[in-house]
Image (cartoon, rainbow, N blue to C red; front, side, top):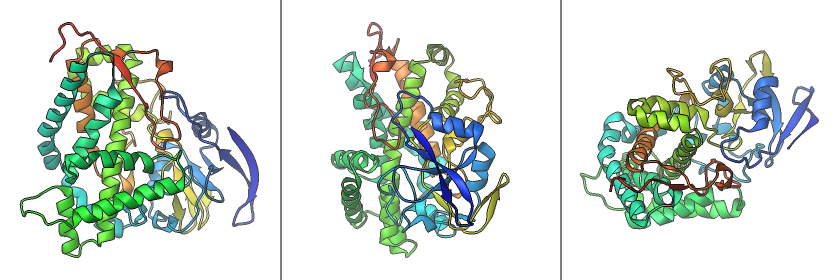
Length: 416
């Protein structure tokens, strides 16, 4: 649902403002509003269901890159403002890195960066593969059909990010509940705020625990950064919450979306089985293709006059940049609605761009590769157990993904 009104801007102009309802969409359907704006009005004013006023929406690839890498657009300036937005509440804690601008942003990222280097991620790989194998073993024992969200895509990313963070196995059910409450717009602000308070209290306590000198999990690193006055405790807790929540939830849904895309594109699935070396390119194309969220992420505020592709954005105006539309820009990706493993290098923006580029893309790629490769290898004939239109999708979610993903496979000769 969209509607158009006229609104007077700070410069006295009257310009159209489009209301974007951001519907719950089935499957991997691309939002028709975003598709229309990309093709017809790539820099436009919008109003979202919550917050106040309007914001600019930037949709084309080059414009998205320009806005997200331009320090004249501030994330910090969003704090304390009721910017028009999808959710009734802001998702990160106020001190989170997502709301920071350089140089504070650079300082905050430095404290967690070494947990996501190629060497650190490589150390996690063997343990991650063991976790996946154990999950698939248990699913095979129960037999087909089975729900991948229950058996694999839910527990696997949660276990991996908890290993990195240092969250004990017995506490991971708490993480699952808090994450679900924080990253849904369906339960209202009070429910989300309570979950943020509780998970913040948990990590305040975890970071304060005595640690052995050989501990190298992320909680230990953050504790050391607080002790060295590199971070405040509030900053360390906000970082821990952000990584724990987004690290589990985003990979859970993205890996499930990848599987759904493959299971509904049987030719690509068959090719990936036949050509395992194609996996890295396939993952990059799936990252580009999948509309991984509803709406848009955090806004930025223009701190001075900025012109983007001939459109003047005034100081104080909010701006949203859509990575989803950037990844479907036909000027960059030929036939962008087609899932094509032969595109060659895919310069997608699924992990963001500029200072706020995702801190853990290597880990996300590793988890996606382990998930897809293991399931395709271990479960011959893997396929949906219901027609695609009967797969249930999360409603009121900020990150898109299936609620359940029922599958079956050929049990004769499957690996155990």
